[in-house]
Length: 491
Ligand code: NAI
Ligand code: CS2
Image (cartoon, rainbow, N blue to C red; front, side, top):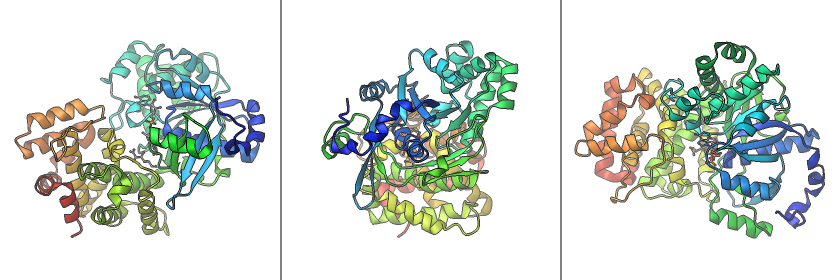
């Protein structure tokens, strides 16, 4: 149990005294690092500023995460956020907006019951891109996904986030209760629309009237979310414990920067999150989301694969290599920015430099291996739409062709020194098989990877210029290694 008497907490004890006045308004699926460092922090700050106490969060894990839930429950769901800036200054904050947490990976009924109560006005998600069980190239629900297959057969005992949302909405409809708003906070293009499509596709397969009711009454606003939040490690937990004077198993270290751009479309109301610095409500999130997913996340994934293969364990260490620094700058300024449609006057060069400075933050220890996870779910929105723009407009996308080649080498699960790579990806086995079958032919290996429809779609494998660009990049990577190939981008 956190000793809230230590100096670290004493400055918020007056708020803690009123904590039992906070009532739930939000149920969150995906109690992970990002939720704790972003939505929970911004909601905590909102409630402190406004004095409103009816937007407490109850957060649940439906896949893994049991230990974290137990740890948080043992400390009354209080936890420390340590915001670290590029100069190494670390600012600790006690977060009290999560008023309960649930491990719902085995029995989901209490969670569905909670979501079906009228007090639940928003259901938010950070379940990772794979948690939506959709084809990231075309947004369609993956009907052959084992979780979806199970849930379509057992709609009252769902396992997937989509199935759980539909089951809770069905209970609300049966009880004559207005639906909640579904707020996706995952790094997906049109995340609200994609979630809506997946929910409606699923619902229409079990109950057409329910699907119509959801389509007419439920809202799924899109968001752009941004804060770099590496996974907690024993080292990060020990450092925070040392600094605050006691252990906190829910502690998370993140950068000082935070941003949240939200489509203002809430059926049962919402917190005035924009009272808090870094949050804005807009009519159209798309330009902000494209800018962030392509500039930040596209560069992050470039560094993840080529940095890992080049022997750099973290983003900041990769950025300390002048060639990687120059390559990321080139990627942002020359490849990504031309494809963006931000409003007139947006300082995209300034945004690029701010991102580069954020990547160089040595206090974050953001592992290239962590960012490399789930690449099959990430690279469509991070790289491929940028490449499509250049194919249509006759532009140069060489850095991204090398990024694709780096991803192909990475998912082959053997690094440049012959050591195995621990690949975490829902398609890991399928991708490794491609690499093994075609280990003697680079061309066949590349073309088979490109034939994976859920990643590269129908168009890219048919585009000769794209295929040749990736083949050339793969050849360069094989000859020069990651460090040499990255250096060649700007030599
Ligand atoms: P994390 O590993 O700490 O948490 C992942 C969460 O997803 C866990 O709660 C887990 O239970 C849940 N989950 C995983 N697979 C699932 C599935 N198939 N169905 C339902 N739930 C599932 O990761 P973190 O850092 O919290 O990131 C989660 C997501 O947040 C990311 O995938 C991304 O979309 C978004 N995000 C993360 C940022 C970061 O820097 N960590 C920044 C911006 C967005
Ligand atoms: C990262 C993101 O792990 C990853 O895929 O690129 O989580 C990144 O840290 C966030 O999008 C930053 O807002």
